[in-house]
Image (tube, rainbow, N blue to C red; front, side, top):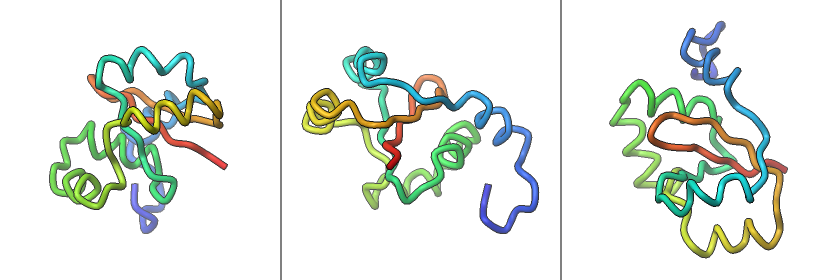
Length: 102
């Protein structure tokens, strides 16, 4: 969903309903499987999930190239484990998208 859209798409609404706060301990197994994607705070987590689910390769590639979406690295995982920050996640099989919130 872009900021110009008046109403969210049905997919966006579905993903929004499936987005929830989650602790790092619950996400560690997805990190271990290599399927955990970190979404930068500047992006709308649900919009990223929508782009992945819609196979919007152009947009997803731009985010990946800019480092705004990336697989969670070991350093980030260790940081999350140490701090247990406020994390939100949504599943877009096979990926789990996660974002730290303030």
